[in-house]
Image 1 (cartoon, rainbow over the protein chains, first blue to last red):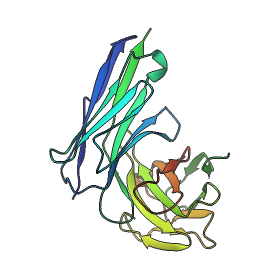
Image 2: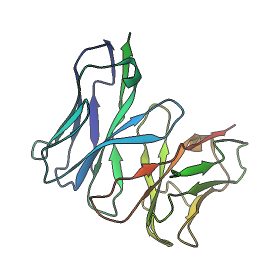
Image 3: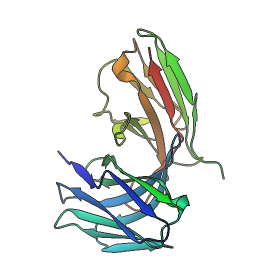
Length: 112
Length: 115
């Protein structure tokens, strides 16, 4: 059974810092990995999707990498801003009809 | 364009009541998913539809949970005889098609509280 773990569970940084969020998964037979952002009381917003054949994806200040063989992904956020404060979730799509297996998330607080 | 919408946004039910949660996916999206998110946890898969066909219901926690998508568009998740452990946020997501290239777009969720 696929299990997804995210470290750290919570992170508090001052504005402007670069930071790294970690995601690990137990079964390397995945189709893709997605990083999501969740704001309190809201649904999930997709940030980046990395297909299993790719090593990384970039969008603005965000960069996500994937090392399928070691079962790891990292989300790098450059020059963090208070508006980045949210919970970040990673999810992997394995075998079966596209269902995503999520980690428990990293709660990020960026203070001005 | 319009995203995934869910209604109601909040629902309080007394233990033993039946509830129905609605999801309106993005127009034209073939795939529809339901997830359950307990407080402080990541979402957990419940069930998946491709058009009107329910292809995977392996995540439904008990036979009290039932989902349908009769015309391949709007979906309803029904919970019978609600229990306190059913309290959670229920998220709906849709995707353009089956395949690894297609992202899932999530609705705002329905927060269910069973008292």
